[in-house]
Image (cartoon, rainbow, N blue to C red; front, top):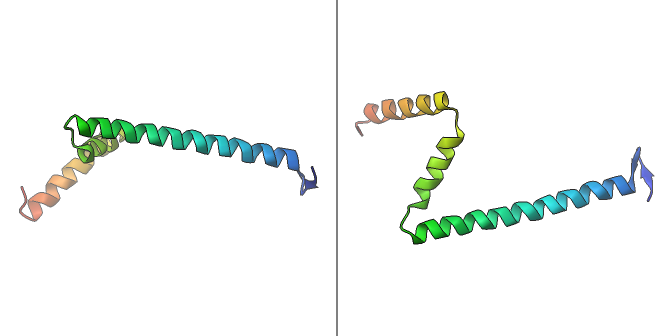
Length: 81
């Protein structure tokens, strides 16, 4: 393949094919996650809450605590607590 701006066509094609494979894997993983949520929902779990818990678990503990404190503060400020 042609050499364009110092990049060979083969190298470019290799990058593109790797990205395509990873995109396929990402879609398969996304499908698997969707199936797990559907299974959990079928067993009576609230998937919106599960998603929130997953998001919270990804956070650093101190960031999560700060966010929860702010949420409580805001709720108190508007009379929700």
